[in-house]
Image (cartoon, rainbow, N blue to C red; front, side, top):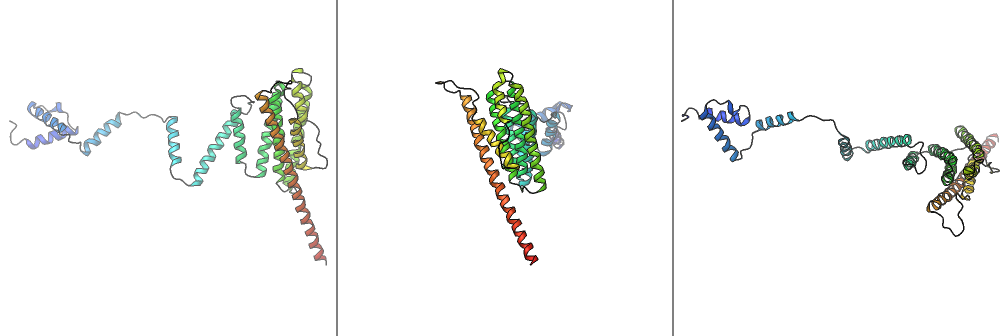
Length: 330
């Protein structure tokens, strides 16, 4: 018998053991310990839930047993996607996307700067160049990017020519001429009489002439080796003298580049014997060179039209100024 004075004490002991405040083995009285054990079993059988204090104590024990770890790459990606999915001002999203694109462009430019066609990273290099051109908003910026792309293609053409890769040399040289024509057409969109534009066009013309002089020296050197004689002929087309009489500035640059692209389109990287179908690679190279020639010619036509329009506008402005001075003189 536990006695009539012990129910309240028994309830307190059962509650403290159930909460984890006291261990069952710490109860010295065997009868009392058995009574508490039976009461706890009854509570478990009736599925009585833990109170708030017991749940908090259990949670602290579980969390205390966990060891923190550093976030993995997958965790960081998941957090990034979660942040992008949340509502945010469009300006913030645009800044984040722009930063990501800039990082991608920088990484791709560094990783694939010296790659050549058929290299694993070459397609990434071309994609980064297209992305740079997409983010170039003004005509001056686009001309700068296209000039940079042209210089990359010319450097590739020189490397390819020294190894006797005639088809790739032809494609790289053709793309160089097309990008030069496109850059000249972009500069034609600017006001040609502005001092800053005049200096920019003069600098562009000097670089264009220096590049072709360097190519001429390389073509002469490669002509002595039968393995690179064909590539030497392709480079000689790039270095040919300018034939654009009557044209000046960006018109002359664009016309020279367009003529260069058209002459390269007339070249055959690999002569195909009669009754033999051209290889798919040769056919693709021919198509790329032909398309580059068409785009270069279209760019040269745009440069001429824009320059003529600017000249007409300037002439009208001068005539109007002369009339105003005559009216004031009268």
